[in-house]
Image (cartoon, rainbow, N blue to C red; front, top):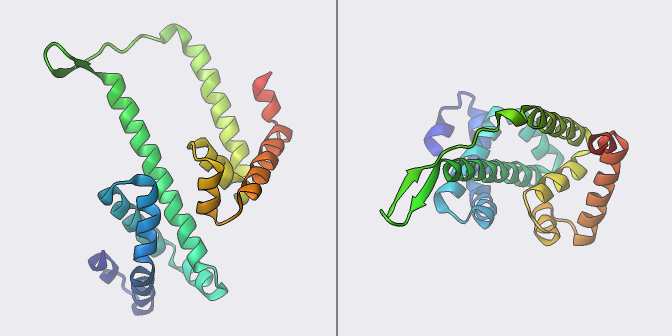
Length: 192
């Protein structure tokens, strides 16, 4: 990681990123490892977090000046973990849909992918609803949006409370309020 940091041209920026890396590397790694349970994936998330710091260094400097750098780093790292989990899930789903295990020959073989061409209208409507819902979620305040996103990944209230550093009761309230706001912003139209 340090060779990448050395490529930063501005000496002040390089020193700032190095300081963050040295001080928070272990914490970022532990956050990543907690959810990914894989050393290499956790290291990749730490690397992605540092990359994001280098890309938006001014925002991180201002966060440092305002005193919420550690919280911002935790959120950025958590989002990198969530992206890694989503990518892993998509990859697993794709691989499982293309391969099936043949117990007789003790090997994997390609399976036929069913033809859903007659259901195109239903798929389009479903994708349209997802896009609409995604747009509504993005309009939510970040504290509600984070809870919704973490819930959609299957995390329970206790895990979300630990990630966001809030109480479980507050997680339940934010989730309830987020659902209510989504409903009021037009989510009810998706279920008609």
